[in-house]
Length: 166
Image 1 (tube, helix red, strand yellow):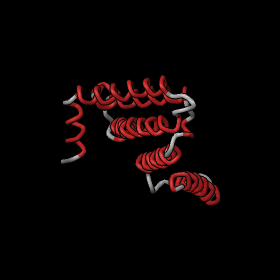
Image 2 (image 1 turned 90 degrees about the vertical axis):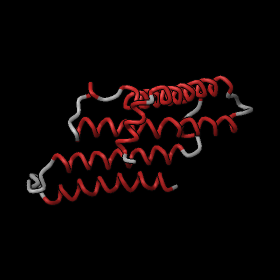
Image 3 (image 1 turned 120 degrees about the vertical axis):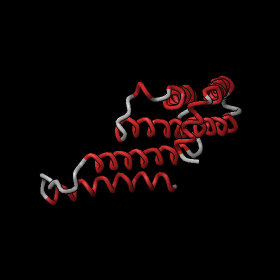
Image 4 (image 1 turned 135 degrees about the vertical axis):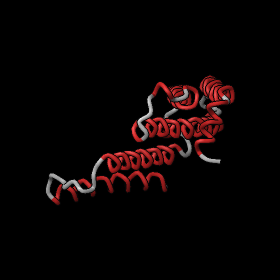
């Protein structure tokens, strides 16, 4: 089974994808209504589960969408609405709903998740830049500017990794 087979499966089973994100949305709304000072410690773990349950598919769908548009040159009009766009919309919607009630930094594991997203995003941008550039082209700035750019990228990756590894 390839990744394309998985995408095709999601594309042909719209109901399962929509039920999954619909249930997650209902649970997020339910959590925001029942959370109070007495049960915050218990509901916090349910909210954390919901964040992971929608963020991982949402981020994967976002990067698949960007990969299809930027690397493969696909048209957005040819991509499946439920497969590529509903996880992103559900992720944004549920994170906004949960963020109204509790700060995301208070949820267990959210700093690691955000660090992982940052690392994946930086890696994606670096891959895109490398794919679009020619290695034979000479850097127009000096060697020190090139080292400075490299150092900044490595520092950002290191900070993100330290947040992820905590």
